[in-house]
Amino acid sequence: MPERATPETAPRGNTTAYRPTARTVPTRARDRAGYDRELVHGILDEAYVCHLGFVHDGAPVVLPTLYGRVDERLYVHGSTGSRPLRMASGTGADHSGTEGTDPGLAVCLTVTHVDGLVLARSAFHHSINYRSVVVHGIARQVTDPEERRSALDAIVDHVVPGRSFDSRPANDRELAATAVLRLDLDEVSAKVRTGGPNDEPEDVLLPHWTGVVPVVHGYGAPVPADDLDPSVALPDYLSVL
Amino acid sequence: MPERATPETAPRGNTTAYRPTARTVPTRARDRAGYDRELVHGILDEAYVCHLGFVHDGAPVVLPTLYGRVDERLYVHGSTGSRPLRMASGTGADHSGTEGTDPGLAVCLTVTHVDGLVLARSAFHHSINYRSVVVHGIARQVTDPEERRSALDAIVDHVVPGRSFDSRPANDRELAATAVLRLDLDEVSAKVRTGGPNDEPEDVLLPHWTGVVPVVHGYGAPVPADDLDPSVALPDYLSVL
Image (cartoon, rainbow over all chains, first blue to last red; front, side, top):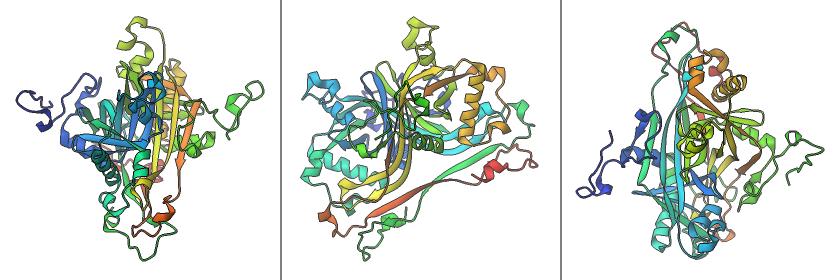
């Protein structure tokens, strides 16, 4: 069971687990759910594309986007003209009556790694080995200039660790065109499936191959841009990818 | 521009492109959007995990799930006890007043492939090469027994082509425990980024490495289950993965 902290004696940030809530306890396969912060951070840090869900005109919208993490905060960014960013800032069509305020935007941010294909003897027990994190919360615009800069660095470094230091930082014009949203890691759960197939005992003698096909992810050889000066060497942080 | 069919003369299913709608035309980077059916089918068929968004108690929820495609229909499945499946069937908490009806469930189903990391000289122009499909619509429970069976086969075969034929089909008890939702491909868009970085002309002489790091996906050697009879050979459909 995840640890439950008593707020008076142990500030939430110091506990080792997120507190389960009604919507972070799954309706099924509860044994696969986890709330450990290290587990969650590990899953979040291994990916860089999340699927961000929000509600627009009463209907769900799910868009892939890059993200970064700084401690217990996630950041996403986008053009100041993009729909979720405008909605969070109160300048979108859904917030025309409250322009200028910052109502935030209710979001669900989900990250998934697929680790293997689980082939059971029965079609029913086919599955996937995966690790996912689901974050619920209110995404809010970041306006503090320092936090905006560190958030943008975190997003770049989340994709390629060390890269933000080896690129030209955003200038004022670029910063003005970029909106940054923050989502605190508070209502969070992980879900993990590992291991082999779970066939029914009566199926064990069926003549079908059964097991797990590992899914692997990697990088190909970096392809320099056409206009790259050939004297610029491949940086170490890329050769170790 | 995508082809726009006149319903009277050309049934939508025969056109080569999906009809853009207000919510499938992006607010930015419109040149990356596409509506061609072959493009969309190709992106959908190369993946097997989607991110399914729906609205629960007014807030967005995004969950990873397997899916299959049969022509212009997508299918997802799950336990009859899982939240989106209960909501679509009208037996979920949000539909307690209309139990027994089939209101359907407004969903957004998104599939994303990451093809490369785009490293520009400026932090601002960093990007990702990707291909994504976003499907909006109403997911409805499938009750016809034949369609349910073919949908479940499609989901298994979407992960490993040919596998449904080489496994025990679901029995009545398993079928009764499984809900299947159908989402028609109607309000659909693809978004694709390819190519190298788009640096500003004044940044070209900066000393930072620039180019694309390809992202590759593949499979490791299949790992047989502990209880697999060693005389069962690895099937051809796995050796070609």
